[in-house]
Structure formats: structure tokens, C-alpha cells
Image 1 (cartoon, rainbow, N blue to C red):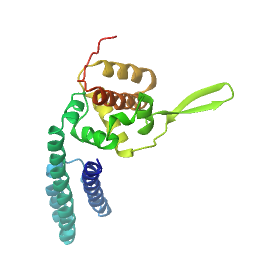
Image 2 (image 1 turned 90 degrees about the vertical axis):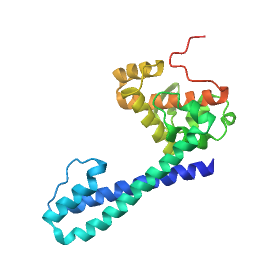
Image 3 (image 1 turned 90 degrees about the horizontal axis):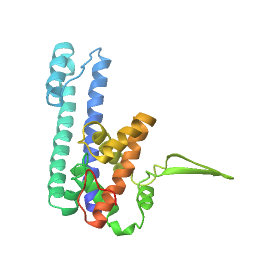
Image 4 (image 1 turned 60 degrees about the vertical axis):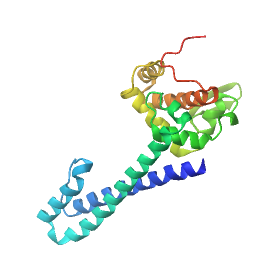
Length: 222
């Protein structure tokens, strides 16, 4: 589990390095009065060098060096992502996780590595608490109400689950969970709905793992 988490964190670090380098390049261009605008990842390096050679040719070597670092981080992140996908496809548990709409190889492998053993938890509430997706409970006398989520536990997995919830609600195929999330978004807003769906996903993956069941888009009531 520690090895898998290290692999995923290495990829995450490379992604952060790529984004940081991209932002630094854009910032240096703006300092010269140059705005790059929106460009695709595949055209980023060429677009930068075209502008630099035309507007500030004296800085061409500096930008070329920064773009080499950016390209290396991008390529290595992609290489590790392929490795993650290969490991996910070779594992029965993660293949079961990927049956859930919106959940991909990165989240599946990270969830498996973070929880390690589904039998560590007895109840669904324990899973939500462990991942920091459970709401805080405020009590005063006879009054009690729920607040924001605790955000304790693993930040990386929690972020991935919220991203999966976003994909499910915006692009995912129709299922009971998506309908529930969209109805909640209509009543309380998309931000709260995504967090609530992320909590449902965390519990759903745990049940599929523990009970060795396949995902059912429209489960029948007992």
C-alpha cells in the first residue's frame, strides 16, 4: 500500500511541477507585456517560442530551458500515469471500483492503497470519518446541527473523490447516485452536492470491496 501511494504521489508531484513551470513561463511573458492566451498542451511550447522569438529574442535561451523542464515533467507524469493504469487493470479490486461511473484508475488505485484493508472498518460512518468527508457535529445543550466536512485524513484521496463526483454529475452516465446528486444540487447548490456525492462514492467503493459485489447503476430496493 505504501509503495502504491508513493507511486501516485510521485505522479502528483510531477503534475504540480508541470503546472508550476507553466505558470512561471506565463508570468515571465506577462512581465514583458506578452499575453499567451489559451493554447492546448500540445501547442504550448511552440506558441511560447514563437512569441519569444518575435517579441523578446534576447530571452529565447532562458525560455527554451524552462520549456525543457516543463516538457520533461509532462512526459514523466504521463509515463507514471500509464504505469498506474497498468497496475489498476491487473488488480481485481480496482477493476471493480472502475465499474462505478466517474471513477478512474488513479482514484481506484489510490483508494485501494489508502484503505488497504476493507475489514478495518465496521460501519459506513467510519469510512467517511477516516477520509474527512463526514460533517462536523456542533452540540449545545439540547441543540445539535451538522456543519462543514472535517477535512481530516488523506487530502489526496478526498480531492480525487470530489473530482470523481464532479465527473459523475456533469458527464457520467445515468444512475441512481447521479439522480440523487443532481436533485441535491438543485436544492443546495453544486458545491455541497459534489461533496455529498464524494462521501457516497467513498462508502459505495468500500461496500463493493468488502462484499465483493459489482456496481449496480439502479440497485433494487430490499
